[in-house]
Image (cartoon, rainbow, N blue to C red):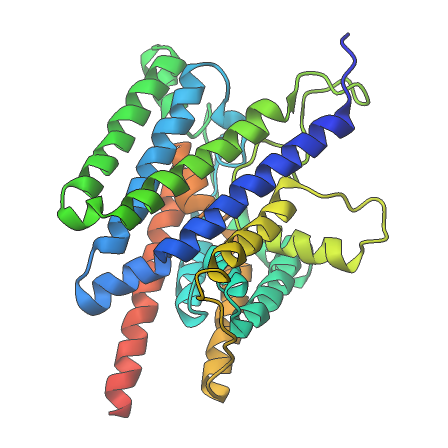
Length: 371
């Protein structure tokens, strides 16, 4: 057996994930990439510009991930998203909670980190409350409720739930071929739609769509290829280095926020190790600040009043509980998960969008009622 320096592999993986996350933070700060903002633009103004950049990012991520599956580098079954258990109710309930919460909190987990990098103190409060509520839903009081309710309702398939695996089982065709065809067809269709109108081809849209999608693909490669060890010399088992789930991971910003708070609070505990999720949280903040400061976008911002504070606190709790329940956020399920063509990810993404639209309609109703 070849000797492998696991510490050196972990260090390389962590630095690569940090660097890619910093790129994401800088791009999001530069282009105002935001899923909640994209949905709000449509509901409030009928403007699809930012939705096109998000859809383009999804398409690029689909093409990239499934291209690597076709090459034999990755397998969706090695991720949280591609297993045989379809947690449809958790995805629906958790996704709707997250979507509603991100509107109240002025953005999803990724946007919260980007805003922290830009000096937004409201987002710092959201970050802390989101992290605490997410950790409680991973291992605490709301975890007990989650496991006893929505997580008990699921469908177990005979194969993985990603579309290439499902079609391979039903048709007998090779999974790598199906991944290449589906990834290119579905992802390509999304990219074409995003580019169909002039606003979709603006410099900011191209940077965000192509850049964010490429970052998601890059982290998949870092986790599933660079950080993959066929036989860990310590356990003699297959391992994905420096991940919280011990599986292949890409970016997500709910559970990793909880793990980041846990690492900070128990820093002296040597069992608390850095992971891709933890360093990606820091990377987005650093990347955002690196762009915001020289471009003079950095400015301190606090809560407007008690109502504003309450909305952000409630939104943060809904995002923390909902994001863990749905196994991801607008990035975790909406980009990383959907790129694997997972059924649960598609359900979660639809629920997130529905929850966000409901929250936006609720806000409009409140404004009209007050007027």
